[in-house]
Each structure stands twice: as C-alpha cells, then as structure tokens.
Length: 120
Image 1: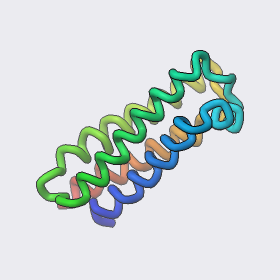
Image 2: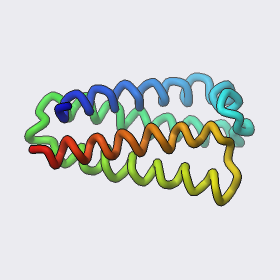
Image 3: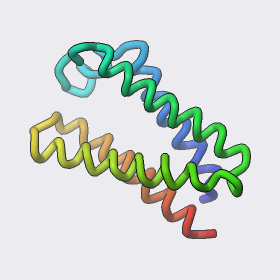
C-alpha cells in the first residue's frame, strides 16, 4: 500500500473519531464503556486534536513526497504512542476492554505508516 492510501485511511479514521468526540462526547464515552467525561470539554479537546490530525493528513496526501515528515509525526509518533498509552491504561488502570480497540487501530496505523515510509 502506498503512503497516500495510508494517509486517506488515517484521515477518515481521525475525522470520524473527532466528529463523535466533538458532537456527542457523552454518547461516545458510554458506547465504549467509559464514564462520562468530566468536564465534557476534555473529550471535546481530544476531538479537536483528532480533527487536527485528520485535516493534516488531507493536507499531507496532496504532496506525499514533500510532506513525509507529517507522516512520521502524526502517523508513526502520535499513533504509535497513542496505541501504547491505550494499552498501558488498560492494563495499569483498568480502562474498559473496548479501549484495546483504539490500541489496535492506532498501533496498526502506526505500523502501516512506518512500513509505507520505509518502503520508499
């Protein structure tokens, strides 16, 4: 798979996640078995972060060769570290098992991005 495809998938993932966190943060938390966010703005700020990453991917895929650095930061660092944080939170603090889905998706996207970057 090309870096452009990875970017499109990552953009869709981040923007979809951001939409839920911005527009229905309490519903999203409950859907994943987490307590209601207190204050709600904490979940919405995480939505702003995810939206920023998603929009960044839309920018980066317009010129993949010139914007590879974005993929390293957003795709490998942010998603890779995010996956590790979700995993650690589950095992160290007992966050809901559904959070392992985020560990899996973030970790998979980080690995996929890394492989696409190394492929060139």
